[in-house]
Image 1 (cartoon, rainbow, N blue to C red):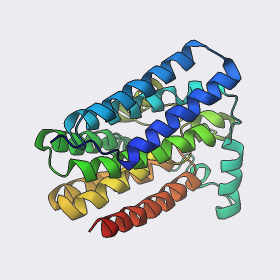
Image 2: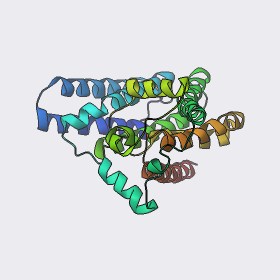
Image 3: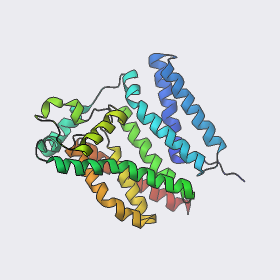
Image 4: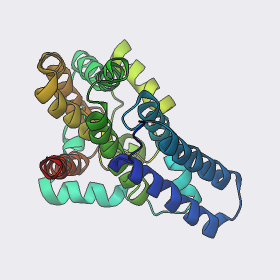
Amino acid sequence: MTVRRVQIHEWLYLGIGAALSVALACVNGWQPLLIETVGLTSAYAWLVCRAETGGRMRLLGAYVVTWALYASSSVLVEALAVPLRHHELLAADVALFGESPVLALRGVLSPGINDVLSLGYMSYHVYLHWALLQVVITNKQSVMFGSHLFSAFAVGICGYLLYPAAPPLTAFPELFFMPLVGGLLTHWNESLNIAMASRYDAFPSLHVLITLTLLAWDWRFFRLRFWIMLTPSLLMLAATLALRLHYAVDLLAAGLLFLALQVIYARNQSCSR
């Protein structure tokens, strides 16, 4: 018999879609963005109701919703006129550290180091899709993996929508007395971020939250990949600040959210036994 149980990340995504639909209807009326949001939410709800829990279609559906919400987050923020918060994030960095670590690194790193850090930053996409493809292909532990991965994505996207902020590089260009120096990898990473990144995706750092989630998963279930990806992940962590893509508080928030989610996962697992 086909099992159709709604997982926690699916409830989160459906809730986000419903809340956005209501907010857009109240603010902008029946506009194309509202139609797209209602359409995506309805299609996802249909898939959740029809496909087997933990099956490949449910995983791929969550993947599509994740990138759709991420790609449209800036448009949604602007449509709903949500206040931008990058000044608050920079002020929080100063309050905690005296000077934002992002600004402390201005002009310190060589082009070669920036290239290495850029490679580490791009390794996030390799790690995410390697882990996801393995679960899709093998269909092993897909229920737990989907819940862990996409719940983290859903929480992070809520941060983008409720507390939107531009990264330091674009929010405060006047604070950087020289451009970021680097070679091919640095320029390639910059191009990818310009082409793919949301404009207000600073808080929290999804790169950090998702990478920590994947590392925790691999420590339990795929120890070889954990050791393979540990060094690139550490480089990615440093790159978020060195490449002017996040404030330090974004990383702290991601770490706290990761810990909170791990506690929730552990309690849910113990209750299900």
